[in-house]
Length: 266
Image (cartoon, rainbow, N blue to C red; front, side):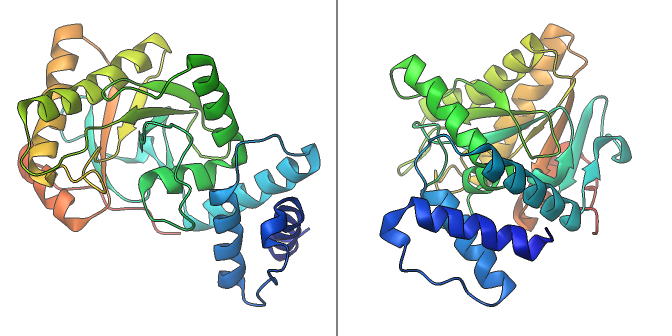
């Protein structure tokens, strides 16, 4: 199968499975097909899929990621001992683990084609990630508290693991409790990474999107917490501050006194 054939197969299987969408027709253009496939995966409940579906999905997702271009951590230059700054798509970074800014349900974003990091990571990891998260949450028996962390496989992402953390939701002015909880997200991820022998971790800008934590204060807390944890524990873990927006790039460059490494070109 080529990519077009894989995409059509996956869409048709999902349409057959989700009867409420069975009257949808498959678009002729590739972008329309990509949007429909992503949307169908986004809204799908966490359930098992056939081995054939997963095999074709995995082949499709890995080729799509390769087309976007994979950035190797080894190709980045640290801005200080063990700390990196990189602007790009975190789902294309090859390191030991990346951090997902999750919601308390921990099974990903269900809004079709939403551009949040939670949606992107679940989309390009594949349907297995949502299923693993759902099983983990079922065993836990309650929503994930803010400021803690969980670890899963990364499936079709270039990294090995995904660490999921729920950041604070800011309503109005930032409180000291908001700041404490955000710092706890970074600390919890670092502690969990160490327990699982993770040697490198990439942090997204936790809570700065739909959770409305101010970008500058969030970056200050991120840098302060990571630096403090590395000093206090003597950890040798490599930490990447991943930014996507130019605004965050500028803030982190100032805080770290460094120029940001550009994203790799496909």
